[in-house]
Length: 174
Image (cartoon, rainbow, N blue to C red; front, side, top):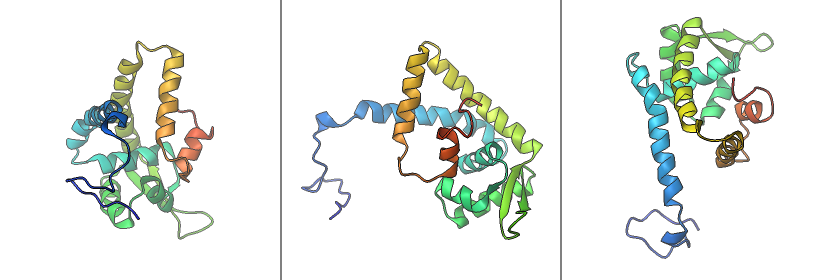
């Protein structure tokens, strides 16, 4: 039986004591994520976009011809959640949608040059942050960071994008 969240605590709480919890890593991940996405957030705000727009345009740019169905799986969101964001990106000319060659019901997504330029700018900001963070770390240490981040992703995740990234479909430093 799953434990219900209870701010008062109860007998169903995890067995780990406070000394066993990784508060150091948990909080570092929270703050690292805040600052990592914060660089892009400031840029996106000028376009009236948010993090959802960023994720959509990122994956569409990195994986041209991505099916809408696959994008839903990658982002783990509903059609309704994707709809508003995708419509805005389409309407404003950052993404184009084409029908599949073999299956006309397929909707394939491609970034326009305008979309690619936005993604390049955002990735540049994030790359600068990453480069500053790893500047004093030797190559073996950087590989350890990559291994740690990979291990944080659910192993049974069937996402095709993760397959491409980790399965050798694309270089992770592109």
